[in-house]
Length: 103
Image (cartoon, rainbow, N blue to C red; front, side, top):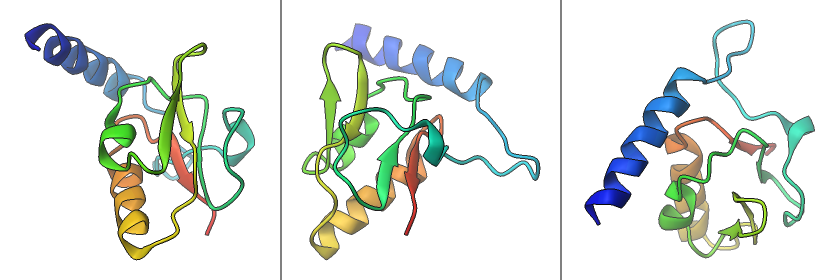
């Protein structure tokens, strides 16, 4: 458990150091750089995903891991108010802003 927490802290530090910014310094996922295999709809994950597990822990009904490639993706778009809230929480807390919402 300690090794996982240490690895996560290290991953998050690297992620914060490498965040992308738009011209107005607003971080955001790139809808033109989505990872493959996602459910069609508003929410998506782009290729900046560092596989930190935050979205899968926050909204497990909506995000899954691509084990072969090592990234998260939207498995299912939110269908209930609770899933919408959890997916928005995942978007808001993604350390590299790899989750987007086109809606």
